[in-house]
Image (cartoon, rainbow, N blue to C red; front, side):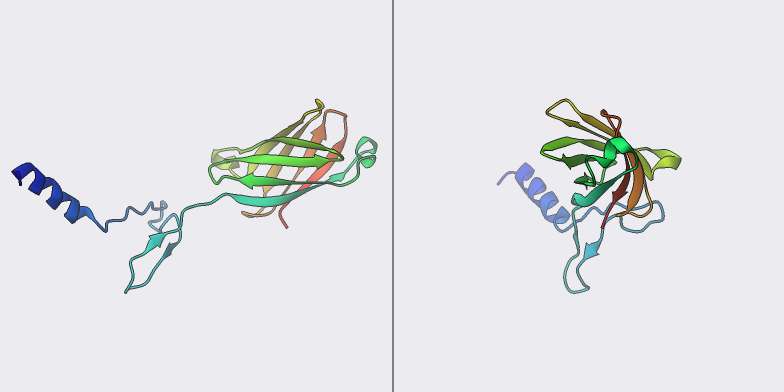
Length: 148
């Protein structure tokens, strides 16, 4: 066995079992850590979070359609996907959070195969609930509710 092989093998043995834990600004772990004093901790990987959305009519143009249901999937990186079921048409697009002091606010846009589109503005009150408003290309306006 060559000296190089022994050095590389030793380095590999010395680094096994190391876990890099991302920290928040206050020094706490950024993601939940599971495990005990007898078992090594495992960092739970962040996953996307899907929340229901409901749009309630606020003008006459929207009253004809009634309540619209959909989902927003938060990819936990400031962006997500936005889907609405408007009658027989599915509209899809994206949601993006603002940065800095307005990090709870964002916009969501969706487009349908028949050419209709929706533009929404929202504010998250908690990590899983928020409110906002949406305007459709038809002139219909809705109050947006995010979360269960």
